[in-house]
Structure formats: structure tokens, C-alpha cells
Amino acid sequence: MSSVIITKEQLTAFERWELASFDLNNSDKRLSSVVELENLRQQAYDEGYAQGRDTGYTAGIQQAHIEAAQIHMLLQNLQNALNQVDEQLAQSLLDLSLEVARKIVGDYLQVKPEIILKIVGDAIGSLPHFNQNAHLVLHPDDTELVRKQMGEQLSHTGWKILTDPQIKRGGCRVETSHSQVDATLEARWKRIVESIGQDKSWQI
Image (cartoon, rainbow, N blue to C red; front, side, top):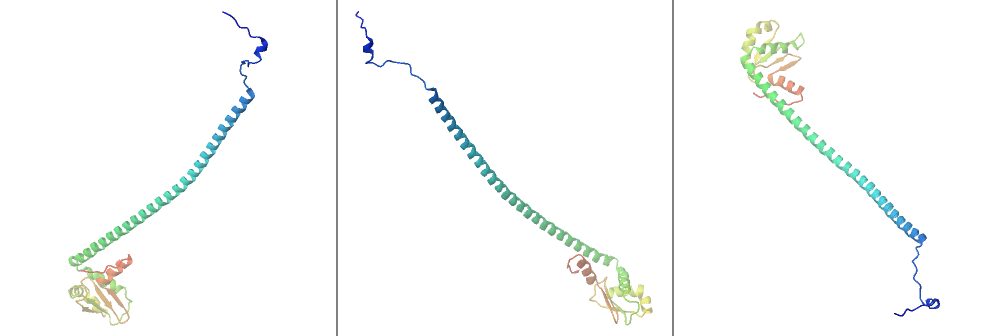
């Protein structure tokens, strides 16, 4: 085997292989640029996130206010509806109570006709003490009872007892030259229901 010897001069025609050198400064710069880009990206992300969060929060608050206002309106409407139901229920109960009271009064007058004596006494008592041409007007069925129980007293003071079939039992009219007291059943009932803000007329 023949060996070939390469002289030094011949080596100049070839590039010698050398271990590649690493430029640490350039590497640091590239690494720094990457870090800066990452920081910028993170900053942009954070700012975008914060802005989105604030925008979303503001929008959420506005929506919450809108929904709260709607809920408040619904509750108010519900309350108004309940109030109307309460008013209707109260009126219905009042109407029922008046109807029951009217029926009880009518039945009581049938069972206790002598109640007319107190009604006549109260009506006469509401007049001035001195009366001229005073007379008492009653239903014919009540006239007999009043004449029997109060006739002598009324005659002694100058009162006359008259009858009127248009007056319902349990009522009367007291009339003098200067005044009149309507103590008929209809008039007394009207005063009662008007005192509680109603206008229910008396009907038998």
C-alpha cells in the first residue's frame, strides 16, 4: 500500500474543517427578542382580556338593571292585581253583609213588630219640644200597635196618628208645621249604607 503525503503547501488549496464557533452575543439578542415578543403578546392579551371583562361587566350591569326594572314592574303589576282582587273581595263581602243585614232586619220586624214603638219614640225625640200640627204617619198594621201603646200619650200632647199603606212596616214619618223626620225603613237604610260609602237601596 502506497501512502500519499500531503505537503503544507498543498493544504492551502483546501479549506480546513474547524469547529463552528457560537456567537453568544447574537444568541442573547435573539433570545431577548423572543422574550420581548412573548411579553408583548401577553400584555396585549391581558389588556384585551381586561377590556373585554370591563365591557362585559358594564353590559352585564346594564342588563341586570334592565331585568331588575322588569321584575319590579311585574311585581308592581301583581300587587295591583292583588289589590284589585282584595277590593273586589271586600266589596263582595260587604254586599253579602248588607244583604244578610237587610234580611235579618226584615225578619226581625216580622217577628218583633213592637220595635216600631222605639222607632217612633226616637223620631219624635229628634224634634224640637214645641210643635204645632204634629202628626205621625205609619203603616196601617203598625198604627194599631202604636195607638194601643202610645195613643193616649200622643193625644195628650196634641199628636195625630195617620196611616199610609205606602210606608213599609217598621217605619214612620213625623211631620209638624216646621219640620219633618223621615224614619221610614228605606230612609234609615239609605243613611246607614251611605255612611259606609254604599248606595244599596232597601228592597223587600
